Amino acid sequence: MGLQEDFQEYAEKAKTLPDNTSNENKLILYGLYKQATVGPVDTSRPGVLNMKDRAKWDAWKAVEGKSKVEAMNDYITKVKQLLEETAAAA
Image (cartoon, rainbow, N blue to C red; front, side, top):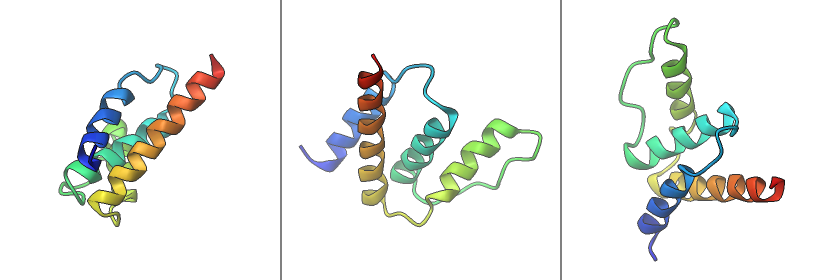
């Protein structure tokens, strides 16, 4: 399979992560996903009262320098890591 197919497969697998996955890990995945699918941040930073969207924006901004390929590979690696941790805890 190509990288795009692997990325789509792991995007689906990410949906199966347990609810107790930390917000930090969810934000890392969000940022990498957005960087891989949209590219660099293309919106202004949400206001201070909109904390959830602001955190998501910050996570995306943190990986802004990565190429689409790097972001896809990092996303796949992170999902694999979280799935392994979930399996080990079970």
